[in-house]
Length: 131
Image (tube, rainbow, N blue to C red; front, side, top):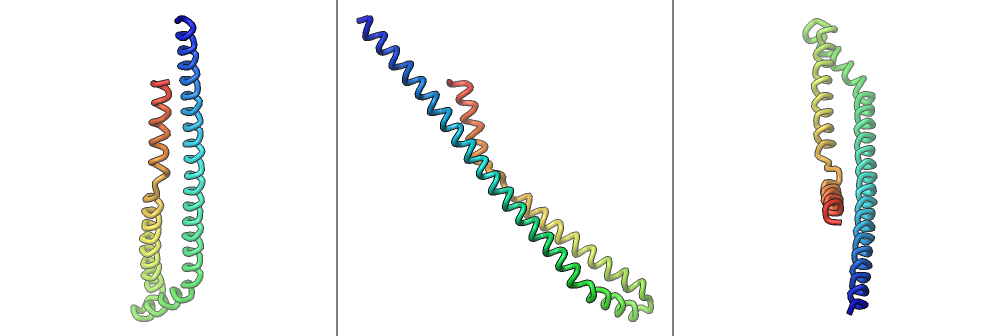
């Protein structure tokens, strides 16, 4: 009878050891998944920033001569070349600010792997308290 109890204790110990090992492996796999998701998200953000920069540079360079011509034309209309250029500059500034704010909002909408991070925190807490 005592032999069976020690065998049962050994098998329970073995089961507990395997359970802890499996939980550790699950935790490590979740951590790797989180790393992969964060890397993917960082790549997407970098691409969005690159496209934003390319668009901004292209827009500024492509529209430069049109803006100067528009400023000169408005300056002729109001009999003040500096005034015409100032009006065009103000319009361009407002347009740039709106575009920048829209880009910032788009980047803020991205969620950084919230579900995986939440599950990882929950698993770590469970392992700390349960195992």
